[in-house]
Amino acid sequence: MLVAHIRYADGTCEVATSLIEAARALREPGSQIWLDMEEPDEWSLALLGEAFSLHPLAIEDCLHGEQRPHIDPYDGYIFMVLYTAMLSDERNFIGSRELAIFGSPQFVITIHHEPMECLKAIQDRCGRDPENVLGRGMDHLLHMIADTLMDGYQPFLDRLESEAAQLEDEALFDPQDDILERISNIRSELLQGRRYLTPQREALAQLARGEYAFIGKNIRPYFRDVLDHLVRITEDIDLYREQVTSARELFMSTMSQKSNESIKIFTVIATLMMPPTLVASIYGMNFHLWPSGEFEHAFWVVIGFMAAITALLAWCFRRWGWF
Image (cartoon, rainbow, N blue to C red):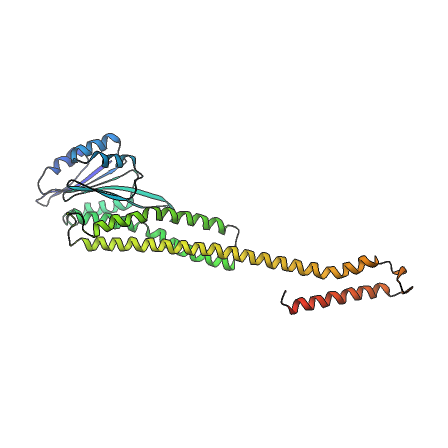
């Protein structure tokens, strides 16, 4: 699927759906083109590379996907790979969606193998107000795309913030058997998210520093703002990872403490039962063979003696704070 938003030098705009129309507009002096390709095949990418004079290595990266976030400068344009978050309806992190971008003073080409709602929003805006999106320059459009990609992580972070705090409270006050599984799932989501976020910082830093000629001085502060946003996202992920780790340690400590309390209770019970058991085992409760002779109250004397020892031990344990 191909959609090309075209703005000509005289200010007229149109939307093209074929590569031939986009290539024809590219030859018009002063034209500006945003071409978006979704789920391209090898043949479409080859035609795109030929029409826009794109390097075969960059085209190959677009075809295979799963590239590390980076920027490669070429003659007259740059090629960069960025990622955004792919979330479920519950804002769970499913994975990262890759976006390959070619950027130059005359065109921006975005290539992705899965639908991206963030790009759809910019396309709708471009359809309503193409002058504001394309007329301000390709560097401005590139900033809009990068900013939207980073915003894709925000719902995921909002969920993590509340869930990490909830896990800490549950681990301390209401530990359940499923907490460890939930902690493991969140840690996995955090690690996957950070895997793609960290290398993106250097890519955006290059744009913010203005290392490429077509990034104007007036747009560089906006890229610095996107970079700051990315840094905050990375720091938040690190914070939530520490918080989740803390919740895990708190859960293990709480369970260990409960186990110790249970062991202490059973120890106290066993200790209280030992003196009566010892007395009963010595005499076997054969009162007619009591050493001092026949004693009709021997049974109750022994029972009283057992109760007294048990009560004394219970008083000692209570005073020591064992229960």
